[in-house]
Length: 332
Image (cartoon, rainbow, N blue to C red; front, side, top):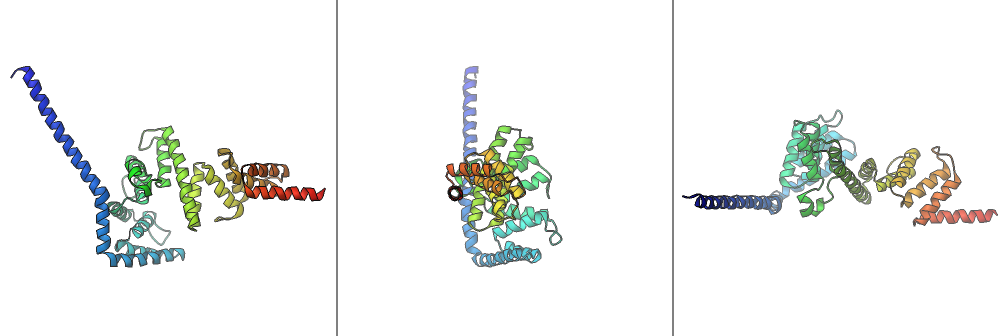
């Protein structure tokens, strides 16, 4: 066989191997796709159908657990969550996994191994951003597993709604804001991933936006404690909306105890991040008008801030300015 024929023969072999390789890759990806999307959906529907009676019981047990949490009886709450989780309720499994991860004072001791088992069971059944976040936290802090920053980043990345799942699963497109915060921190420090300050800033911004979306949603559903938690997360990344909302809540005692010092700090930071912020200007105007032992009373500044808020479309500020104008005219 001459060299020319040998080269042709070799190229044919390489071409055949390449075709086989691409075929195997395609079949593998197709199988994975079938498992991840319709496969898990069919499995869950079948599971729900076969275990419908058990799941109904689990739902009642979950509600009882939540009721005991509200009564601050952690021991009984955990007992009901445990029963509900054993009966297949994913929400109960998620709540229980979080409780077991860190424990509750003297009532429940930390049991990270059981927490890991529950989280892995949830992930097998469905995509769950919060479960993915908790797995990231375990690897990031070495809770019940060997600390592994790279694995932590991978789980946070999934939880954050990034990559492939961002496009195929609309309900998770916002991701978990806590995971987005952790990704930003890891890019900033170069932990578990190569340092990238530009990507860090991007994820901090994303975290603030998502935290506000969740915060507003919780508030609309009258879940004030979770709303406050989300807006506080937003303030950590200097999101203007979160700073404004939480600042006004501290000013008026909405969902938190009144704290004029915190209100002034948050509202001031809010307008420094975004000057088009009428509600924050109105809040600052009220503080300057009354002092509240935080600043010296300053009617001139108060009027200035009310005017800015009114110019930016705040109806309450417009009403206050009209009242001030009427009062001045009556005093002449």
